[in-house]
Every structure is written in structure tokens, then in C-alpha cells.
Image (cartoon, rainbow over all chains, first blue to last red; front, side):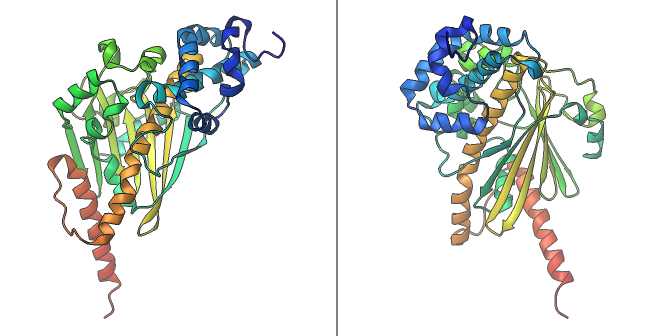
Length: 111
Length: 244
């Protein structure tokens, strides 16, 4: 598929890639806050059945030598983790009972 | 108490995540929030399925060991082996990633003896964590699942401070391990936001001076100790700087 972000085996997840292939936690957290529950539920429902397969695919590479599409897939898995909290626990993007509290992740490892 | 920690393999855990927030409360309030754990089954109840959270609330919480050493303190907790729980007691994402708040289920072997490092003093199996409260404003929290984190609390005024939380893992060898660390880190933030939320309100309440005394229970012995030591230090300072 021309312009594909993900490995061909995961083409069914391609519609979610432009939104959720995000390299950093601040980007993923901001996308979560800007997304509706329907959007996150659809992404969650699509990726969770393929998660083990996706991790196995990425395991074929060294973490410091991932192909571009494998790195995108790994970032999509991180976003799966990010949306799992609204989907599985909260029913809303925000963590309940947090008021004006915030916690910024300023340093994080790659890839 | 603390010095044995030099035998803990900090050097193997170089995968680092660094969080920071400015908090509108006195620094000691956030220390209090993290130096007792009986709040967890109540404040964080919705972080887990009801099959787990209801059982946890009914069981209550009691730490198996507290230690006070001069101005420093440590609390140790028992743990759970999530992989032995019924699946309905876990979040689906924990089953997918084999990880969660407590850290990766497939913990790396750090090759050290707990006794030599002065951790898990009650000999719990499973063991949860040890939280070392190093006076005045530093915490090292060692998890049973072979990772650790630190907290720094930097006072910027009597009613504001900067909180810093740093997580350390063994560098992941593959995507499975990397994703397992990711959910532990995201879980830390989900819980931490709930812990932080009460602080500003508590500060406002304290400044009203409506209440002057606060009964603290036995599970809050470390809170009592921090405030006693801090008050002693302030008193000593006042005596040394009193005008003759």
C-alpha cells in the first residue's frame, strides 16, 4: 500500500496509524485527551487482538535497529497501552479524581 | 537501614523516565501521600476490576514492616503474583502486556540477595515493595518486580513545591519487554495523578487554620515521624538563631 506506515501484515491497522503512531508519551497523552471514547474504543478493539502478533513482529529486530514500519508499529502498541485506561477503566479520556493535577514526562527512552 | 542499599544493583537499571510537576501544596503533604499505602484500595479502586478492588477493600491494608532510623524511615509491603490471579481480577491490558503498576511480570534476575541490600525485611513472599524515605526530601522505592523509582520534593515556598519522579528499569531486550515497561510507566502516572489531586485542597484546608490537630493512625506512623523530625529541625534552627 503506497504511503503505508505499518508492515503489510498489519494493513488493517493502517487507518489508525496517522493518528496513533506517536513517538513520545506527551504526544500520546495529548491525543488521548483530544479523542472521543468512540475513536479510542475502535482503535482498542482493532489492535488488541493483534497485539501479541505485533510484539512478535517487532521482536524480530533489535530495539536500536528497528525498521521504520516496525518502529511505527511499536509506537502504535504504546498508544494501545495509553488508550487502555480510558477504555478499560474510566469511560472518559481523563483520569477521574485528578482535578487540576498534572505530571509531565520530560525524559523517556527510545525507540 | 539505608546504607545496605549500596548492595542493590542500581547500576543495572539504566532505562530512565523522568516526570515533573509543580504542586500547590507544602512538600510534606506529597511525602505523606506516598508514605502510607492504606489509601490505595479506596482512592485507586477504579483502576482495577471490581473482582479485585472489592476484595482488596474488604481485606484492607496493613504493612508487614516499618523501620525508623534517625530521621529516615522505610515501609515494606507484601505483594501479589498477578499471573496466579483469575483473569477477571486483572485488566485485559495487563494480560496482553504481562505487566502493570507493579511492573513486568517476567522480572529480570538482578542477581543480588535481598538480605544483603537490606530490603524485604519481613521476608514476604511474594514481596511488594520497600519505600525508603530519606530525610528530608528524597525517596527510593524498590519494587519486587525488579525495578525502582525515586521521588524528589523540592520546596519552592511554604505552599508550593516541585515534585520529580524517576523510574528505572533494566534496558529492555525486545519489544515485549519494552511494552511491559511502558504500561508500568503509564500506570505510575495514572495513579500519581490521583494521589496529587488531594494535595491542593488539603493545603487550602490547612491554611484556613480551622483544624489544628490531626489524629494519625498506626498505618500513618511514617507520616507522624516525618512531621516530628521536621518540627524538631525547625525548633533547633529557631533556637540557634534566637536573638540573645
